[in-house]
Amino acid sequence: MKRFIDFAFGKPYEKGESFTHKYFRFTYWAAVVFYFITISQQLLIFIFNPSKDIIFVLFSIVLFPIIFRLIYRLVGYPHGIKREE
Image (cartoon, rainbow, N blue to C red; front, side, top):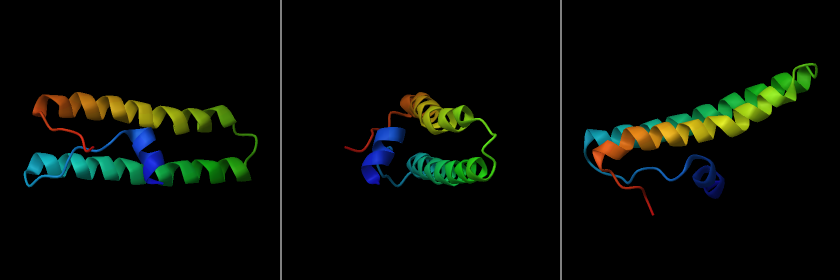
């Protein structure tokens, strides 16, 4: 599971004691939890209502992590925080 999360969302920023470090780590894990809850809801809706287009579900599965990685990197880059290795 950890490998999939690292692959889909990238690695989180490293741990630290400052508010910025804690904020970015909280945001990362909140997005991961939100992603899995949303995807499971969309899959359940698709199972119970097959007329719904599967393309929407697939775009959600693929595009959310890509957009998250982009925004997470753009917002975190100016703060000079390194990613975990």
